[in-house]
Length: 221
Image 1 (cartoon, rainbow, N blue to C red):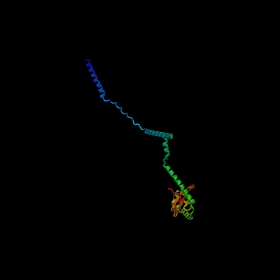
Image 2 (cartoon, rainbow, N blue to C red):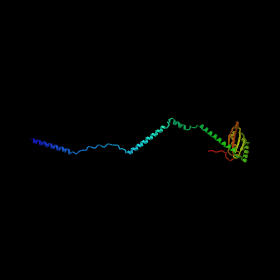
Image 3 (cartoon, rainbow, N blue to C red):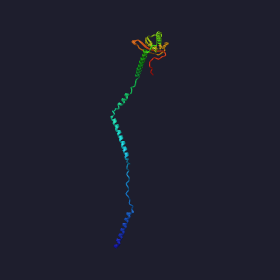
Image 4 (spheres, rainbow, N blue to C red):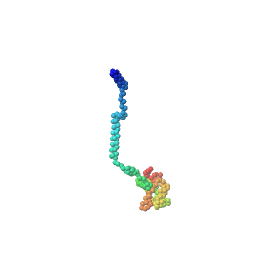
């Protein structure tokens, strides 16, 4: 009876052992799962890093230079800039100022012309034939009734120019003198009258050119 029992137990143990071996060799060993790859940012090559560093250093150096230049520049207040611009602009000229400037320019021009005419009258040689005839013609013209109110006190002619000194009874006689002179046959030239009014008298100096010629002074545009 005991031999049967041990036999059963031995058979059972063999079955269990066989099952264990089958279990060990029947299953395919599994390898542990490989860890998932971690996302790693791409690394720049050493040459690229050096270029970036050099570029950053250059930008930093440029900023330092700009800061140094700004530090050396004297400060300018906001109020100074408009004031400086305003000082450069010319103030507007009023109508009265413009008229005064124009009158001043006219007087200066008259002085220039008178100086040139006076120089010509004093330096021109005398054309005895023309000068003598013209002086007689002018003197005779002032004896006409139309010249009443104006008296010839001196006349001197050269080659291209005559100088007359005339006294007047008033403003009207002086205003009519040039138009009367240029109507006289043989005196159809150019004439300029300069009022003098010396010693309280109405007087004038007249420059008269030779017929068909211009007065000897510089023309300007």
